[in-house]
Amino acid sequence: MMKNNVYFSYGTFVSPIGIGVDQNFEALKEGNSGIQAHPSSGFNNENWFFAQLNNLEGNRYDSLLKTALNDLKVNYSSSILSSSKTLFILSSTKGNIYNLPEDVFASSRIIIQQETGNSNELIIVSNACISGVIALNTATDFLRYSDYETVIVIGIDVISDFVLYGFQSLYALSDQPVQPFDKDRKGISLGEACGIIVATKEKPTSFSVEYLGGASSNDANHISGPSRTGEGLYRAINKTIERAAIDKSSIDFISAHGTGTLYNDEMESIAFNRCDLQSIPINSLKGFYGHTLGAAGIIETIVSMLSIEHQLLIENKGFNELGTTHSLNIVTKTQQQPVKTVLKTASGFGGGNAVLLIQAAV
Image 1 (cartoon, rainbow, N blue to C red):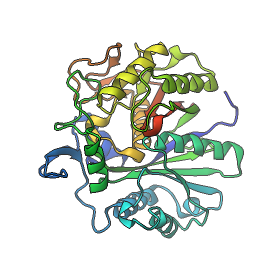
Image 2: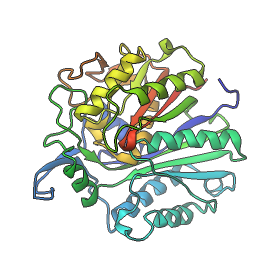
Image 3: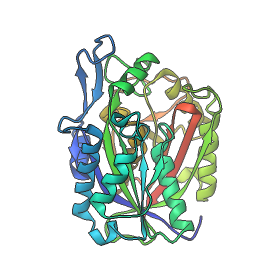
Image 4: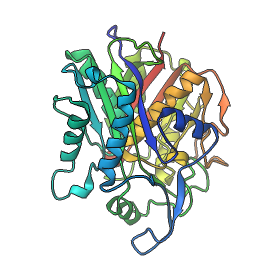
């Protein structure tokens, strides 16, 4: 393991089930999902299920970003946010798509500069659904190999007709709330959220986790379908464990991607078995938040941090019976359990896979 440690601490978390980390955690413990039926939402007035925020005004993307940054400013001083030693990284698959055909990330640059006073160039990571995990791995590289002392990673995406109709055209949407890894799963439920994680070289005085390692790969298989053998995810997991210099037996929990599609969940089960991780407790949070695209890796890492802090595993909502050909130890109910080390995985369009390992900071 590298000696130049990096630590993750909570920034904030805005989703359909809460504003702030605490509200989201309480909702998760109570089993509250943000996924609801939205009649006539489809291209041909189909009824789809997704998790959408109700309190966004005007441009929904800009409103969500401002809401999250305002909450972040409650917990972090302006001297940290505006410092030349602080870098911002934005993870998003679509950005402010309402600005098409102009630059969909132009408003992000403006809003972050105005709200924080930070004049450094915004780093943008837009690599389909693995963007969030890639952004966290990138943040760690900046801290280890540059003069930055703090990197603030923002994951954000909102639901638009473009995104909804796009997934509908791929026959990837479910006509009921998503059921990750379940035998009756039918596809994705979309979601929207903004999560922020603060990465630092120095260990914070508040709760934090230590970043142990990360890696990414590409299946080079298909524009939207994952490798049937899980090869890319298998390689990324093994490389992450190798870089972290830990024994895989020390992993206590896996926060999986678990989109609820036939091929994704099957591929993940194959990859986890190939890595001999099938007995480790595993969940997908898509049943609570839907698939939040570029925000997914960030908000799911935040929940993994909460699991470590509170020694609590969150249920895989929507799961009844295993529907993959390879065994998995699905978390079927929220429960207290020792959690020190968590493996977070993500897989997405274009064959991308990204993985990271975090551990309770000591």
